[in-house]
Length: 113
Image (cartoon, rainbow, N blue to C red; front, side, top):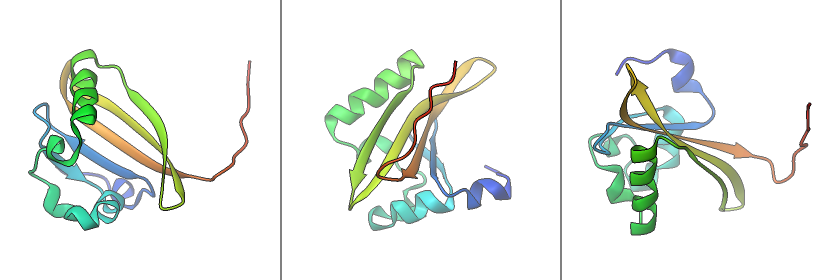
């Protein structure tokens, strides 16, 4: 998968799977984030092997419904926003994209009407 340079250098982790859950792409930040689990060696493995059964069910629902799963976590003192959604071509679901973005422990929130 050929990607623009900015995606490789993007400060958030980007992981992409095919429709069967096989990891087909990880940017540099994703490889660093998942280094202990194998980093870039995870490409070609199934994302389901990296998740617990309850998370596997959520991933299946995302792929079936096309509705994103968005939440925050805190790991090793760092808060992150996780955004999981499908990616499509010609209207057909082709797989899953997961973005993991580090966020500050507190940040402004603006309501704009």
